[in-house]
Length: 113
Length: 122
Image (tube, rainbow over all chains, first blue to last red; front, side, top):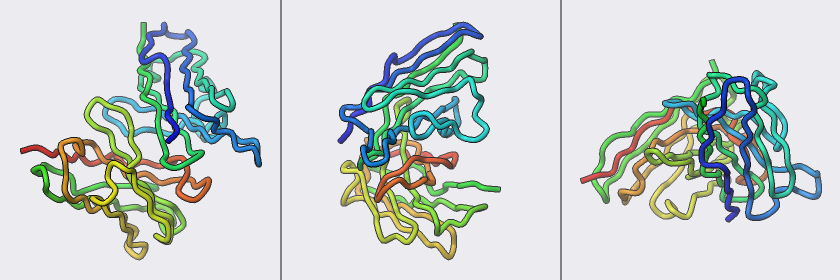
């Protein structure tokens, strides 16, 4: 199984400041035949189901604010919130879909400082 | 409206059974692979089971293999999870999730229901 490790477990950021979340996979999730990274990011607000933010490591879903961006390749990935807003308080998860079983990172809780 | 609505959760004793259902609407259900993903209280997300659109491919996490059975009724736009021999560690919110498929048994989850809580306790 591919193990997904997120860091930090939590972070507190001032409004308008940048938040950076890291995700590392135990093996590469880059598929060489199409040069795509099989990695997604989700946002889960309290009491709500997860919401897909980003697929293919860097493709934002329709309607997701452009302050959210994904980057990275192979085994190391980053979700960046460029200017934190109050509504961004949530837990963020990465997920690999390179191989079965599908696995998630442990989550990163983002709070306002 | 495109949505998934889960039902069937509740309190069950260890060793008992429960059947979860997911009602889909607003999209062509048979064209999509469907999954169950669970979240234990205060914990992260764990994929549980996957069904291709035609049910020709069904997969389970090792933690539930042999105890849970996934089925779907495309005529009724519904997904079901029969859970037998339930254990304390199966306590979780169970989410029904639609997948954008990227390979057999693989994909990311682009639509989620609100979940149904299963509590296994004596």
